[in-house]
Structure formats: C-alpha cells, structure tokens
Image 1 (cartoon, rainbow, N blue to C red):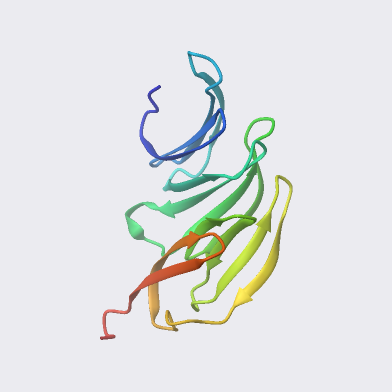
Image 2 (tube, rainbow, N blue to C red):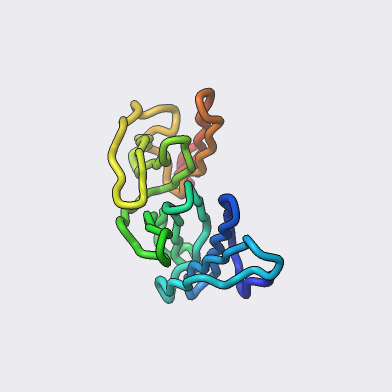
Length: 163
C-alpha cells in the first residue's frame, strides 16, 4: 500500500487512516483483505498539513493540522466520525494534543492541559489541569506524550528572549 505525500498514519484493527502534507487530506483504507481497499478521502485545507492522526476506535478518529511554513503557531484539531466515511464532527484550536485512553489531552497557549473524552459524535471536557512548569513563556507548539494511568509529559519552546 502506497499513500502519496503521507505525513502520518494510525491503525485500529483493520482500518488505516493516513494524513498528507499540504494540501491536507485524510484517507481511510480497509486492510481486512490481502489487497487493501481504499475508503473515503477527505480534502481539508490547501495551506495546511496533517501532522498527526489518532484512530480511537472503528468509529472515531482525530487529526492535527498545522500551517505550512509555521506561519501560525499551534494546531487545528479535528474530531471525525469514520464509521461511514470521514465526517468532521468538531474542530478546536490547540498548541498540541495527544491520545489518552478515554479521548485526548490538549494544551492551550497559556500552558493549561485539558483532558477530553471523545466518541464519534462529540467531545466533552473532563478536566483542566493546573498550569505546570510550561508556564506563560511557552511560545510554540506543545508536544504531549501520555503513558495511560501513569505519566503525562509536556514540553514547549520558549520565547527567544527567555533563558
């Protein structure tokens, strides 16, 4: 299976969802047979790239879109219903996001980390975590990583004038 201009992908059981560089597209594939079957292709923004994909289950996936050339900091995060094609359910802006067992974690420009529950039709805020060591000096995309039930790691670039 070859996906032209693929920038990221994720798998769940026999479903593959791949994202592309600009112009941003998401494409789904059914891997249940010896020859993968193309599913739906969703055309997104012309001047953005898909930089991350997370397939939660057979009906739900998320992706992060970033401006080409870093013209605008942060991501636009999309929640998609992938049960019958790829349909955008919700959009929100974030400095970063990462999968979490019940949904995802996002970060805002003020360094606040938020936990979200997600399903194929909606997302709901579970908790905002107190601003941690990222502080107000964070200026670029926030990278998040999660070890479910154990740890959360977050890092951000600092303003060039900060030590």
